[in-house]
Image (cartoon, rainbow, N blue to C red; front, side, top):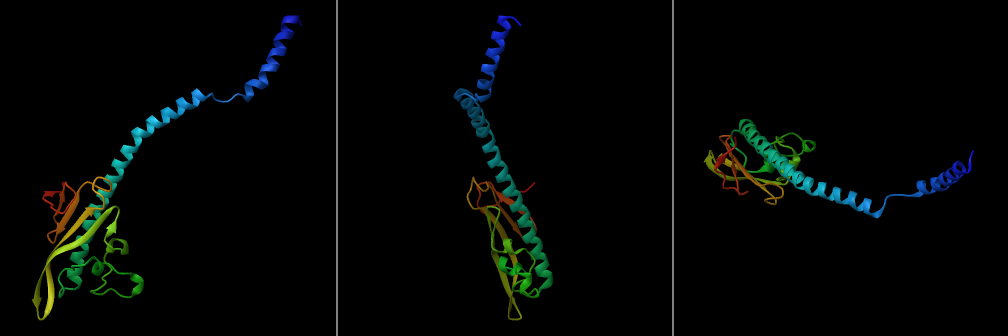
Length: 179
């Protein structure tokens, strides 16, 4: 082995441990972090948009569930007509058999009136008195976002005719039909 080869061999042994100890430079780390931030600024708005869409889809399905429960309630308790309260449509199955005050037709969470960023109510109940008993003949289910623009953009409504409409402003002025 000549002197030049020995010199190269010694230099490679000296540089080898040094190369193993080196990490990323500050510039390299800043570049990686910048790329990650750019990707996050693109992804976060899309995620918020998808969340709003999911909340709106859940609200529409919950309105449908309430309308179906109203039809069942009217069939089970014809003397009462429709229910004018989510609590009447709900009820805990552990508390006993279904009754007109707790029909157990919707889940307990929906019966509280809040689900997936929306507030649900039953309003505009019209009643008639038959044989000294009040009977509700019509109603309107409303679902409005808890925070317009964040939890949802549109409000939803349905009535005893099972027609679901929406309010593009997020309120209860529902005039446009769901397609």
